[in-house]
Amino acid sequence: MSEESGFSLIFQTYVVPVLILIVGIIIGFFGRILERFYEEWRDREVQKRVSRGDLKMSLKNFCDQWEDRDCLIPHTDLRKDLIEVIKEIRERLNDESAKLSEKEKMNIRKVTIDFLKLADVQNIDDLTWSKKVETEMNKICTALKKAMEELV
Image 1 (cartoon, rainbow, N blue to C red):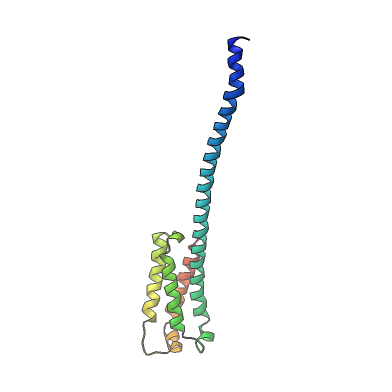
Image 2: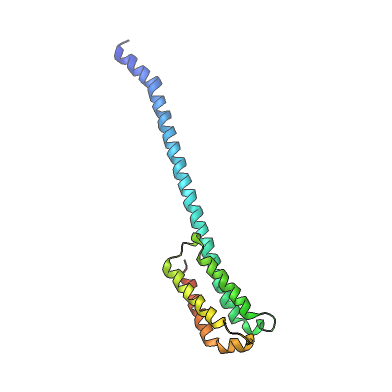
């Protein structure tokens, strides 16, 4: 046997399988890293959708309560309930996982502040209050519905 064919036999028998094993380990290692990055990204995206969905539901809940006010007023404290929903909305605006833009936050914050100004009326019952602020509240609901549509 020549020295060259002996080297070739050793290379084929030992070195090539070891190189294949090393390459396989490296590919597996990087594959796991990429898989972990993908899973973390996917979890963040799911959390973002859930957080935005919760915000949308709060916005919808606010407008639904306002639109159903004629049925609700005799049985609930409408202003108090609407204020609680506004508090939920404002808390959800601060949820970092929703990844809201500053423009989205500011638009919704402005509308919630407008509502809180309207709601800050003392010594007036909900029925009288709702009739007094009906036009402004309809504008607020329109703005919140627009914000809800813009949340993707």
